[in-house]
Amino acid sequence: MIFFCHLALEKALKALYVEKFNDNPDKTHSLIFLVENLELEVPQEYMESLFVINRIGITGRYPHNLDVVLEQYTKGKTEKILRETQEILTWLTHKSSKQ
Image (cartoon, rainbow, N blue to C red; front, side):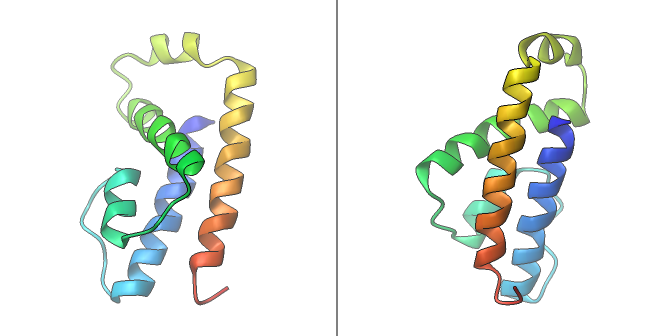
């Protein structure tokens, strides 16, 4: 589930990048890199969530220690990340000129 949260945020940020620069972003899965390149002024609570989702999403994509992550992220923590992802996606949608 968290992997898909990361993926949705990554695609939303890349869409904003294409819209802003009329070009494809560098190949990356880093949400933080994309936010920095877009020069977005992200609210602090969203940045904190992005750091967590970024770290976990990368682990989900490259699961060398996936068992540890699965133990750490309970149903409650995962639901919280899903809610935060939805909030951030809504915020990013409002940043688009194509809404």
